[in-house]
Image (tube, rainbow, N blue to C red):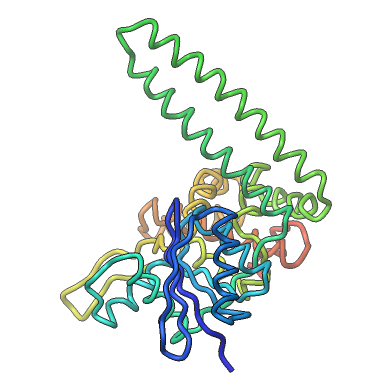
Length: 324
C-alpha cells in the first residue's frame, strides 16, 4: 500500500504543506524553524498519519533541515529538481501560483511519479557541508570587497573600512579552512576519502572537501554518469529536424556548487592530469571549443573522483579508465 504524500513548498521563513490522502488534500503552514518542524509532526499525528512520502524541491539550504528532521522521524523524503516540478505543472496546465497551489502540485507529483528517496548525509558530512558552504560565503564576500577596493573610492575613510573588513574576512577564511582540515582529520572515513581524491592530479584539499560535502552518500548513485548528471555536467543537445541546430552545452540542471568547485581544478588537470590532458587535446584537435574541453575535463574529473571513492583505490593513470 502506498504512503500518503506530503507536498512541501519551502521558503526562507516558512513552508506550506499539502497532505494528500485518498484524493483529499489538507493544508498547513509552519515556520521554517525547529519549532515549525515539531508543529508539523504534531499536525500529522492529529491527521492520524504515522508515515508519509514527503517531497520538496531542491532549493539550496532552505529545505535541508526540514528534510533531515522528517527523515530522522522515519518518513520517506524525496528532494527533486525544480525543473521536474515545473514540467509536471505544465502537464496539468497549472496557471495559478501560490504556496498552497504549489504544495498540492508537489503532493500530486509525488503520488504520480514516486521519486526516489533521499538519503540524509551522515552527521559528520552535514558538519563538513556547513563548513564548506560557510567558507564559500566568506570567499564571495571577500571578492566583493576586494572588487570595491580595486575600483577605488574617493574617501580614505571608506578605503580604510574596506581594508579592515578584508583583513577580518581573511582571518575568518583561514580559520574556517583550518576547521575543515581538523574536522576531516578527526573522522577516519572522511580522511581516507580525502586522501583518495587528492591522489587525482588536479584535485587538492579544498576541492576534495567540497566533493565529499556535496556528493554525500555515494550509494544514491549507481554509476559515474549519474554523478555527472547530479552536478549538471551532462552535455545538452539542441537540435530538431533540419531547421534547429545548436552547439551542445552543459545542462547546468544540477548542483552548482559542484560545478563551481570543479572549474579551476579542471583547468589545472588539463595540464597536469595525463588522462584529462590527452582527452582534451583530442577534442581540441577535432575543432571543439575550449569551453567544451573544459566542461569535458570537469566531467572527467568527477568521473575519476567517483571511481576512486567507489573502488577505494588511489588514482593510477594506467587503471583509471576502467574506473571512470
